Image (tube, rainbow, N blue to C red):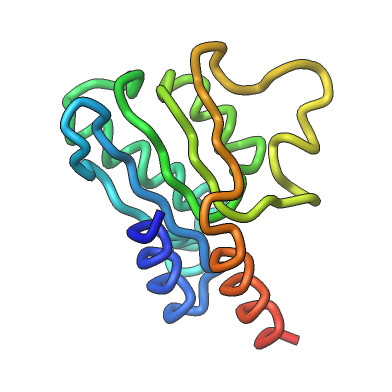
Length: 141
């Protein structure tokens, strides 16, 4: 999660919503992808950290399924990113801060939006992840 926080700080420095993500290959524990939000820079509403990390991870392993990988992300994924995680069959998702307005757990009311085999761990370094987001939005106001 500390590596994901490093990515989030890069987004913060670029005036992007500070969300960072890394994908770890479960077998060796190596980081195979890193990303941070690039929505403003790319002028692309889908350029969330998770989406960019999924693409980079798939390229790194040479396939679209990430069932032997874990996504570490500083903010609870939105429904778009959770839906993409379903299609990647990501093995696990670990996130820091919850997103009570846009996070998948508060929006997905008609069943689980994640792949049935995906494990979820929440609250990892939540205070640090939340603080960076608060600082970003305070700066915007």
